[in-house]
Every structure is written in C-alpha cells, then in structure tokens.
Length: 157
Image (tube, rainbow, N blue to C red; front, side, top):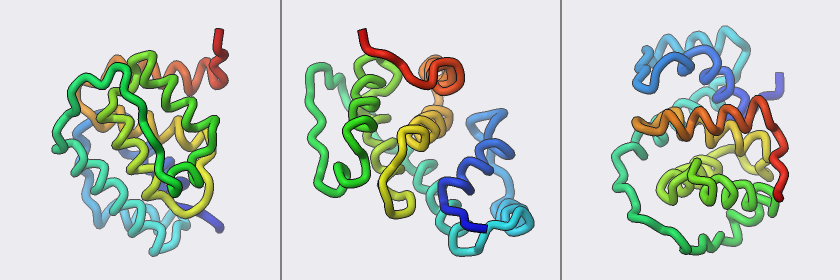
C-alpha cells in the first residue's frame, strides 16, 4: 500500500478526532491501530509527530488584527502551494474563516507534510483539521465543513 502522512491524518481524523476538540487517545493504541490498518511505521511516526506539532501550536500567541496585511510566501512555500491554494487561503482569511494566526498554523502544518505539491483538497482538509483543533473556532469550522462538503468549488463574484 502506498500511503503518505496525509492519508494517515485523514484516517485519524475520521476515526479518532470527529467527536471533540480535546480528544487524547492512547498514542500506543493509535500506532497499533494504524499498523493494523496497513500503514507503514515511518509514516505513522511522521503523522503522530504532525499531530503533536498541531497540538503544540495551540499555545502560540494569537496575532492581533491583520486586516489589510499582505502575506508574502517564501520560495519553498510557493513551490508547494500553487496559486489556487494561495488564493484559497486568501479567500478563507478575507471571509473570516481563517484568522492570520490560524493561516500561519495551516501553512506550517502543510509544509510539514511529505514533499510534493499540495493539492487544493488536501489544503481544505488541513484547514478543517487546524480549525477543529482550536477552541472557539466552532463557527469557522462549520463554515469550512460547508465549503468542503456542500460547495467544493466556491466561485468568485
């Protein structure tokens, strides 16, 4: 089975983290379940570290209002996030679904995934995972779920 860290994150999100923000299941049991599901040990380790980094990001200070600020992407970020992905992040921030702080966490978590370009669908799921992990982001999470499940291709007017 060819899988990557994103596949494992999707599996974990569907099986462990769909009921509450502060879920803290046994890491050893999760790793065992993932091995049983056919995932390879190196990817399991990377995925669990990714989740740890996401949990640690909850303690970062929240940026003040960044209305009108422009996010400048590094070369490495632009290589992984195409124009469509960067535009979608801007759309989410302009509509209030993502704060500047959450946008930075999303980008950090995206860059921590396996090498290669990030697809728009992957970006949407990572945004949902980040919002889901944040207390007080229930409304933004609901908006993102709506975008993901009901309107997968928002149109600009």
